[in-house]
Image 1 (cartoon, rainbow, N blue to C red):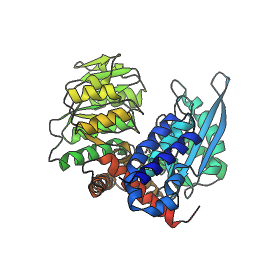
Image 2 (tube, rainbow, N blue to C red):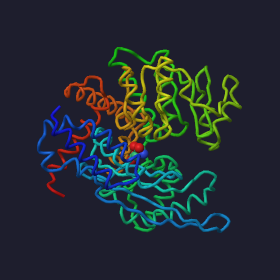
Image 3 (cartoon, rainbow, N blue to C red):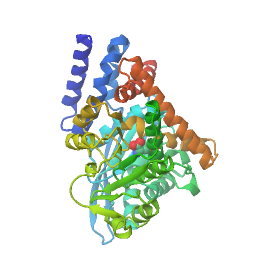
Image 4 (cartoon, helix red, strand yellow):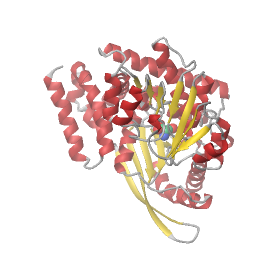
Amino acid sequence: MHVDVLARVQEIYAEVLRRNPGEKEFHQAVREVLESLAVVLGRHSEYTEMKTIERICEPERQIIFRVPWQDDSGEVHINRGFRVEFNSALGPYKGGLRFHPSVNLGIVKFLGFEQIFKNALTGMPIGGGKGGSDFDPKGRSDAEVMRFCQSFMTELYRHLGEYTDVPAGDIGVGAREIGFLFGQYKRITNRYESGVLTGKGLGWGGALVRTEATGYGAAFFADEMMRARGESFDGRRFVISGSGNVAVYGIEKVHQLGGTVVACSDSSGYVVDEKGIDLDVLKQVKEHERGRISEYADRVGTAHFVSRGSIWDVPCEVAMPSATQNELDGEAARTLARNGCQYVVEGANMPTTPDAVALFRAAGIGFAPGKAANAGGVATSALEMQQNASRDRWSFEQSEAKLEEIMRGIHARCHETAEEYGTPGDLVLGANVAGFLQVAEAVHAHGLI
Ligand code: GLU
């Protein structure tokens, strides 16, 4: 490759490091994308002249605000709220809100940056953004969560709108939180603006399949990836980390498509069930009771709970990390490879560390990056916006068929782009380049803004 192009990419990365000190997850996400983009600069000199990559690495707007609230005993708490409006070249900023104690500006920026390319890959008219708070919903009552959401929205509402910025859920934000946020937005603005949030309840503007979409989508993507190699899910062993929304519906779809998921986890440990995870029990424990994963093993005779070690010690042919960022490191990758793992499909955002990704790629293990494989959630959010805009409601079957078509389309684009750029089978490069080109063309067309 041309030395000038590589040097240019290195300069851009050095500037990102200088300007965003200490934001290591953001650096990691940018680096991975930039490593794929040298090949693009070699073909598109206009993106060098117009500093298109530099502009995409700089958020259009970053909002940080105080969120004060009172708990049930009357004690006052102060949290920090964030919304990073990263890129609106393709549509209104779109991306979830994460409520978790680990949330800081660097985490929100990494997620927002990933979201730009993920959203572009869906082919839907949505820009990229992300937000959240270091609020910890764990152990909080419904009333406390409501007061927090109301305080959060009391600041955030002025930055939102169905044509401006449309949040949804992420870790710690589900239908309950979206309900409280929507209620407060409606109260302040005096507008029943359905399209301002997605992931709404089914009775008040929500869309069928949105809940299932990220997990289902990741399973469709895995299926398509295996088909490309002439293989199928039939009788295959899967391990899916996590037990939140992505993992639960990932398990459901893998089982429907003929695979068996033998392990899942939460922050306290993991369960192994050789018979295949019993979804009714898992949903009861995690969705209805908001309990711990060990309770699954208490109720299912064939299962056991492991509180130490790593879920990636469990042998499988397909691994779907679906919990959180950097949960699968180099050591786990070596164990997976040694145990015969053939595919890794990211259900979460950036769950695999760079050394683990490098190991999978070198070993010829099929690797699907999150920005492609987990795009089903946000794609279905865009379908929800479409239904809200036309005051329509689609059936489950129609929505699921659309999701499946979108996921298979994303795989095709990543696959073809990798071939076009001389790295067949490299879905990391395919996703980064295909996503970037879609965004860059629009950025370029809009002039220097
Ligand atoms: N938080 C999800 C994601 O990481 C969904 C975002 C959305 O639906 O806007 O893509």
